[in-house]
Length: 286
Image (tube, rainbow, N blue to C red; front, side, top):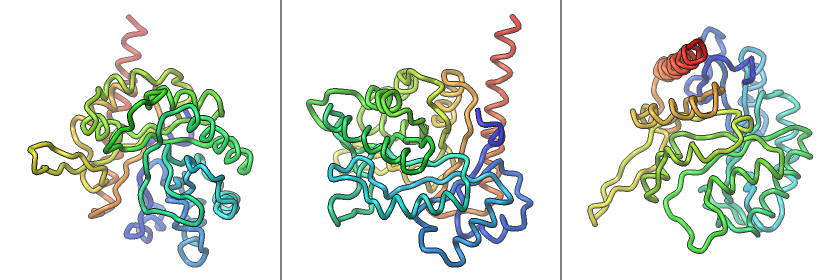
C-alpha cells in the first residue's frame, strides 16, 4: 500500500475548495478530475496549491481508452503537463470508451469484452503509460446492459489488462454493486475473481440511486449523490479481506454536501480498514 495514503480521501469538488485551502481537513488525500484543470486559470492554480498541502490523485473521465481509432494525442499532452505540475500519487482512467473520431459523448460507454477489444485496450494503456512515464490505474465501470457472445467476463478482461499492460486497478466498490444488481450477477464473486491483489492500488466508495421501472424492475444508477449504502460497506469489507488494505476514496458528485459529511464517511472507511486489520492480526496470532 502507498504509505502516503494510509488515511482515506475524498473527491476534490469546487464547493469545498476554499475550506480545503485552509489546510485543516483531516482527510488522507484528495482526488481531482483531470479534465477540470486542463484550461489553466484560477482552478489550476488552486489545484497546484492544494497539491502542496495534501496528497493528490488525478482521475480522468475523457481519455476514452477503449476507443478503436487511437488515443487523442492532445488530451495526452494536456494530461502530462498537468501531472508534471501536480505530481499525483496515482493517475487513473476507466474501462470504457466515450469518443470516436471528433465525436465525444458525456457518458462512459461499455466495452464488448472480446479479444479484439482487449488487444486495443491493452495497446492504449501501454501508450498511455509510455507517454506519462508511469503506471496508470484502470477503473471498473458501472453497467446497465451487457453484450452477448463475449470472449471474457469483466473480471477476466480486467485481470488480462493488468497482466498484459502492467497497469494497476482501481476497484470501484459501488460500481460493482450497481452492475451486479443491474445485470444479475454476484458482487461477491466479482471481488473474489480479481486474481492479482498486488495490482489493486485504490478503492472508490460512493452512493447510488434506485429507479423503479414500469415493469416493476429496478434500475441502479451510479449517481455519486448519496451516502455509501450498507451493502457497499459490506462488499468493501470483503474486498479488504480478499485484496488487502488499500487506499480508499469517497466520491460525491451530485447534491454535494458539506465537506464535514465527506470527512465523516472517509473516517468511517478508516474505521472499517482498522477493523479488518485487527481481524487479520488476530488470525495470524492464533
